[in-house]
Image (cartoon, rainbow, N blue to C red):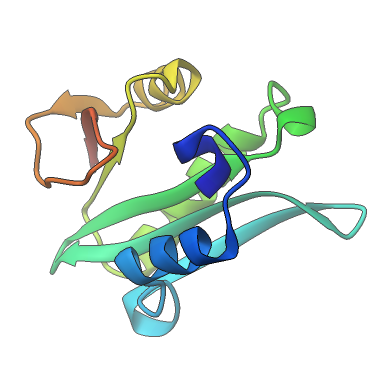
Length: 133
């Protein structure tokens, strides 16, 4: 995912820096989930979900490898994250995404996410979405 952010294969230190800027300890247990889609034992997609506040989750690290795109895997990951959010007592999910990720923005809009005002100052965020239930 770091490669997509910076437009080239990242160095080890860039990966470590990105992980330090966006830690993942809260993507498991009572605080969140990290879901991985596999095909023939190989990871082909993922999505993270963490608490943004008491009743709102934040979707993060949504990614599908290029050969698996366009086959509904993004929708499946999104729905799995929404089910996990309900299990965790969340009433809404928020997310941010980059402007050049047109397919991602279409996916969120087609699945009931509405564009909202910025709720963070994330470096690579150009658009913010939310879905409530």
